[in-house]
Figure 1 (cartoon, helix red, strand yellow):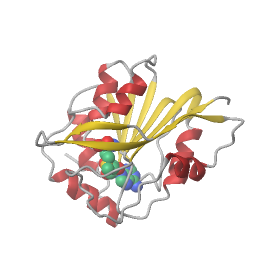
Figure 2 (tube, protein in one colour; figure 1 turned 90 degrees about the vertical axis):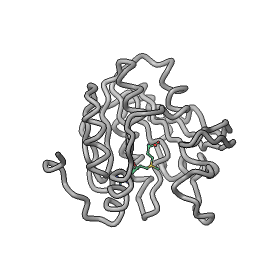
Figure 3 (tube, rainbow, N blue to C red; figure 1 turned 180 degrees about the horizontal axis):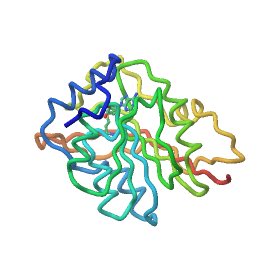
Length: 208
Ligand SMILES: C[S@@+](CC[C@H](N)C(=O)[O-])C[C@H]1O[C@@H](n2cnc3c(N)ncnc32)[C@H](O)[C@@H]1O
């Protein structure tokens, strides 16, 4: 039942809603850089921006994090809710609204969309929603996997430097703790493998 959620009215919302209505499996695999970053942390409040099929939210919830999972697609958030774990699910077009609260970890994994998006403004709002000591983990594609939904050769994925510049955060309150472009072996939905690059930026809130 999705009746209590808004049907997306924007082209972007309708695109992602169609994308997730066509999807069959939910939960699933955690993104490697989310697991690597969160594994050594003491669980607290986590926010997953653009949670999609919920693999990261599920992984965090199973490790004791108090997770809020957000997506523009009502089907995506409802299916994550239906997994029955202790995950708060909220539908937001993050260009219009942002979840309430303060967080110890905010994750934006491949927060890409083929539509115009004020990503810098959304991620800056995310940085402001961190508690002191909290981390904002932004992982973008640095290369396109052969099985990616976006095979447009003209797509430009932001580098960590570009994302940090876009965020334009006060260095007295936030600091960059990691900016890099690691490569890894990735496995696609049909078991195929390829080497992919990720653009990784981790920001820590250092002060109130
Ligand atoms: C490339 S997918 C990544 C999904 C997931 N984080 C992952 O790693 O598989 C981008 C996600 O951002 C969501 N999204 C796109 N625009 C959004 C917006 N304006 N507000 C909230 N979510 C949005 C999409 O619905 C989609 O789930």
